[in-house]
Image (cartoon, rainbow, N blue to C red; front, side, top):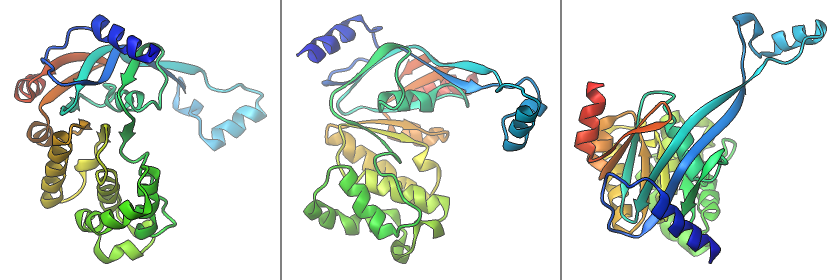
Length: 269
């Protein structure tokens, strides 16, 4: 009850979204700030590899200084059932950090994220183990998403066909190319309808046919009342797949709206 009241309060307090939302809210991001710490260095000689760490120990020097990275700065928006939201921006703009925060993998420094249902970050819930075969990874990945044995058997052939790995399903994941691994991860993760699915660059690998199938699968998930967030450097994929785009710049929302308008402004920047 308290959580429902908090979501309603956050929805009212959050910045008014630029895109009208008519469905049920699934994700509310309210004045979100993400800050994390990394080891910094002032020169090449001080970088934190094993050799320089040993030198520092011998010289009785301390660790490199810690730096704070303010990756997401006051981001607010509301996503609804049926939305497919593209997240675009230059490297270091906070795209992947935002997805991880929505998935609950990064704690807010300030603000909050409210979700209706369980967010699933592609590649986490369907984590693949390189020493196991594709077949075992499909089974374990489906179990990790809460599917029962009957559901796994029903979905198995479709996952193999969709991923396009063919006879490699009987080989260890260590023999797969990065593209094959990415395709299998997407095939496993999208075999189940998710309340909120977060996809980070999964469609960057693969041929034109796989990208087409992936876009169709995302559209099916939207029609099943799910919500999809997609990070991709290929803006054509974003424009063809999403009904809304959020442009992040240095951790802040630069623009939020119709894909064609946002992407056109982004390309001019």
